[in-house]
Length: 375
Image (cartoon, rainbow, N blue to C red; front, top):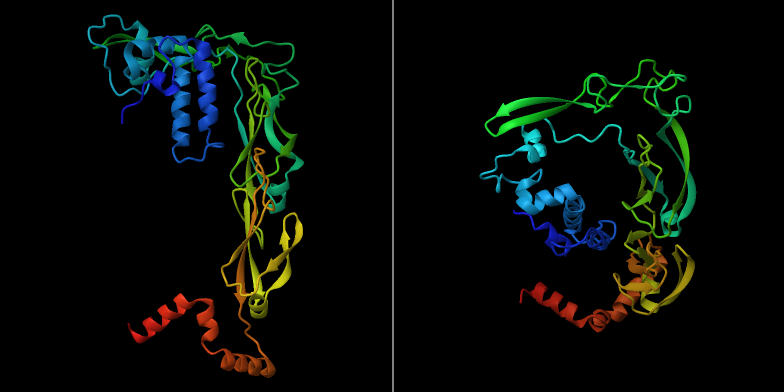
């Protein structure tokens, strides 16, 4: 399946400015984010929008895409547009991919954002309904206070790698049918960092970070549901070379309740009634997550009848109102009867005969009789 044009994906003209591209991306990202949009293809559309923005927001990638389309990008389906090209210097990323370079490496000394972290939190049913504030403890990397992140023993400093001159990569040239190709590999002398640490910090053994248990305060919003997640900005792993920290994602799991079930913002439960209550009607107390409420049961209520308690469900996690509670009636047939109860039921059956059934559901009774007679 061919990819859509990136400008079409973002809904902008080819002459669009960076600001217009960014504005359109933000709008579409909010629209198709899987946490907000539950349509089956939302995740794929979100991925498509993100891919288009990553290309068009980068001047070099955008120029390459404008000239050669998807074929000129990593992951393209061919080399359409290479015909007659004599200078291969501008296609380093593509040739590196085929000849083992893995694409251009970023400057090892440039600021890099830290990795994101994920934490799974298990909530009780009511906690998910009403939300809570709590502290969690997670193991995470933090800047070493002994060497202040340099990895070197106090009083010393890392030196620039003499083999790669601080670039973190070694280049080798290779002649191919396509021309001369530069193959870039991580410098094995400095492990791609561009620096050599002669005397390592004894606290972090040269890593620049140490693992610590960190307490983080989390605000769980009311109405959160199974599988949803909370992003806590800047609470992931620390960045490198002065880069920003990553984010922490708290993934929610909810314990099952003995009585209630939840679908979205609505809560469901079953209400057991005796034959007498269902036949004669009654007023009963029904439990909800908001407390007990009185429910009037009309005479002649049948098994499967559903009542709705408006506003007694879960609050919408994004503030869009309140769900309802749906109560499904289940008439319970007694299994242990005294002789007196049996006699009364026999007497009731003799008096009522089939009339009571015919009165309540004539169509059902007629279908039953036809099926019994083989009509």
